[in-house]
Length: 427
Ligand SMILES: Cc1cc2nc3c(=O)[nH]c(=O)nc-3n(C[C@H](O)[C@H](O)[C@H](O)COP(=O)(O)OP(=O)(O)OC[C@H]3O[C@@H](n4cnc5c(N)ncnc54)[C@H](O)[C@@H]3O)c2cc1C
Image (cartoon, rainbow, N blue to C red; front, side, top):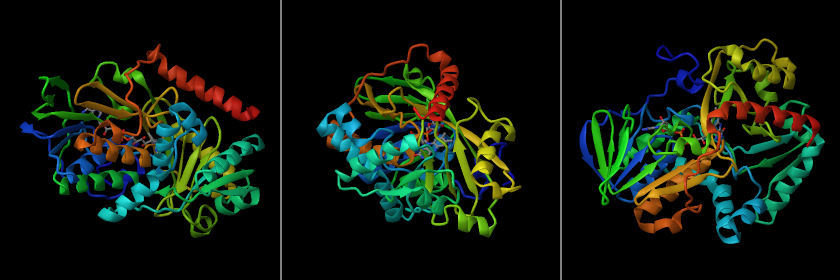
């Protein structure tokens, strides 16, 4: 705990040993260079190394520095959109594949954790989508019906059913999707890095990629003290993307999400709140999400300041909301508060770009990347490992900078205000 920085995630306060990832020094050749060691980059590296590719990962800080090491740890199935909308958007063939892939992504992750013996507190205990307004119930019914037509059974809970699980009377109904669950997100990133290294990949920490040049046949990725050279590159920098590729940073909104965590709850409360380990996200335009972690802390996440956290007061709205859900929380302490950024796209769909031959970019999971980025990484590895673009779950699109991007903070605050108003009015 001693080397934690203020407002680091609770996961950094726990004593997980990080894998050894020295800076890249000198010139290194491989088959694939991956930029960014979050779930996208590490899953790509792991699966590519398992296919026999020589992989070099360059990470600006350490594995899990970005959203992978700070998120809510919810392993949720699906995308933000319902299956019918996805198929309407991408067409029945591609859309159908994407729906199946996003729905199966948690199972893919839990299988991976089991296959490789990753120590990350993973539990497939279900995702609850909970509605606190009767106007939202129709959306829950739609979700159940659409997945049911695809052979997936979600449980539809009434107010009493959801109260029994959550320990609060706030909700009028919920869906319970048993494909979902939770994990310790930083431990998962670190374990993925370890597994990638064990499979033969080089994972270099403290090695920001600062320039990317192509000779036509191969790419040269330059870091402070070294260079990685390979015919193929995957950029996996999501909400932490810098200026490594022109226009990329302006093609999404780098939204901050905030989380506060309690000390381990008293046993009586643990028996009442999500005793079986389900995770919750609220139905609505402004999402609050929460779960109980492996040692019994309540982690409460949602909207927040659009800058790094400076004080526990930045999270007051989250702790107040928790007190509203469970007044009996009383004076339980909230010693942890942090936030992090993820790439939100204008239509909430992830993006795959190939702005030059041999260069793939994947990002934009819009707050749902734990399972999805893991699954996308495996698809990227298949694509670069010989299966080509048919292995990819999305069409490759050009990078489209968002107009007036420099006002993104104002846009997020405005979006949250409008969302809250719509939630309040039941729209
Ligand atoms: C607070 C919070 C809560 C969230 N909760 C959930 C949740 O409960 N469930 C869920 O599914 N999703 C959640 N998300 C979203 C999820 O964490 C992300 O979608 C996911 O981590 C994206 O993974 P990634 O690997 O693409 O990017 P990241 O994990 O952000 O990794 C990107 C990496 O790239 C590195 N990088 C950037 N530029 C360079 C460079 N030039 N050179 C080298 N390295 C570079 C960064 O240092 C970083 O480590 C949450 C996000 C946040 C911020």
